[in-house]
Image (cartoon, rainbow, N blue to C red; front, side, top):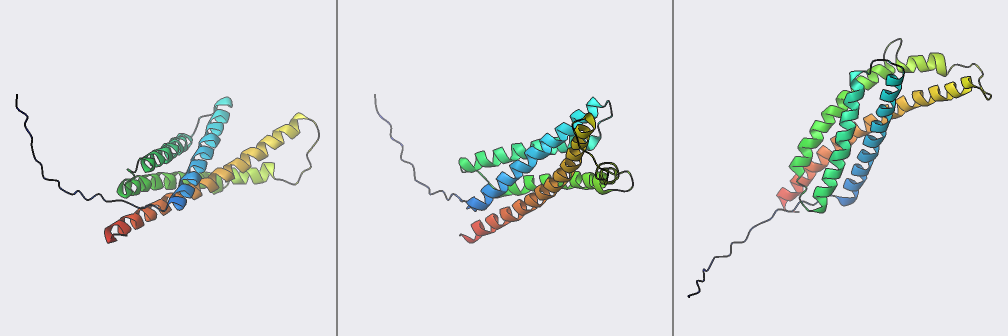
Length: 187
């Protein structure tokens, strides 16, 4: 038997490395995880209330449930890709743009429902819940009033978190653009 040796020429391969601002990326992803989780839990709670009252569940409840679930999946995917050094800025930019559009759509619909004309959530909360009549004591009416205030405040909280998530996805788009530009310049 004869041994066969093949000589190959070694070709240097240039691997492009993307330098993400680690602390900023971690803070943005943590805030997105918090926003997505709280909006997911809030609208799951609103959906359970609607079903318990035998009322139709509006389409935007399911829409916000879906995009908040996608946000949580997005955060875990970005963390996993960053951990294995495969986080490409163009992928983050495109997926962040898609998520930005989805969150902006949910934000617009939620703002119409919350701050809209007569009969909106804020109007009903102001008229029926936050009025100046005295309430208190150990009875079922006090418990119902506390529950109503909680739901009104939860709507405002979810609106604020939707706004924060929309802004953070826009920020993530801009940060991805900066990472691409730094890689092109060789920094």
